[in-house]
Amino acid sequence: MKVIIAGATGLLGAEIVRQSLQIPEITQVVALAHETVHLDESIDSSKVRSVVIDNYGEYPDDVTAEFAGADACIWTVTLTPLEPGVDFAEVKRVCHDYTKLGFEAMCEAGPARPFRFIYLSAEGTPQEPTKDPVILPDFFLMRRNTELMVQKFPRGKQGVEVCIARPGVIANSTTWSNTLVAKLFRIINRFGRTLPTIQRSELAAAVLNQAMDGLEKRTLLNADLVRLGRRELKFRSMPRLS
Image (cartoon, rainbow, N blue to C red; front, side, top):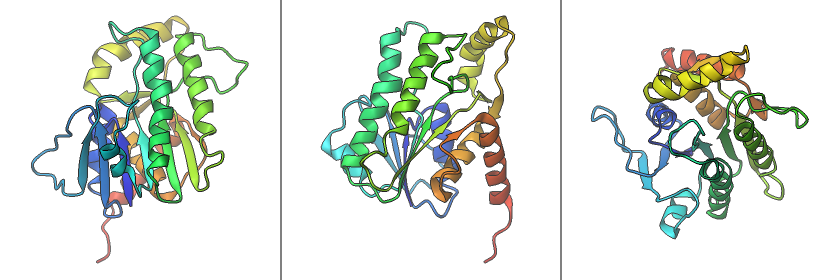
């Protein structure tokens, strides 16, 4: 199968690329990012196509050509308001607008059927429209609206399936854990809440499992992702019959 990984040079995206190369069933990986994906020399990268894009809102013909025939996309492109020097308009553009434009470009390219689109959201996004988030309300309300938008993607498009993945804090991610997560925990603890955690390897394994084997449900919470990821990693560690 052919899988598109959007945000392939990010901490999660890079782990998804790395794991995908270990899965025989995945024969092509389109690694979409702002810069070329660099892999360890010991890794066989023959099935990776590194596609560089200036921004996720514009897709030249040579880029959309790489999307043709794709079986799935794992969309990890995001931006948080906790990053210094970033205004909310830019956060919304990256998290909301670019998601829609990216999905539309992939559909116009002629993907396989079924085509599975897995969107990485975040724990803390309110599931009920009547509930407003206590922390970072603008950010999480925007995330909720983006999730609602993604859930409508299949309308009028035969064979398109979507899934929302809502991980908590992604552990062992060096950049996030040093600064942004520390700030986030301080904010959350002020309200007496803590976020659940998931290992980066578990999250990558979970979304790859869903891309390959089919979607278990439309929204996967952190506990679902931990369960699926651990099961997938255990399965891969088992010896295969020749």
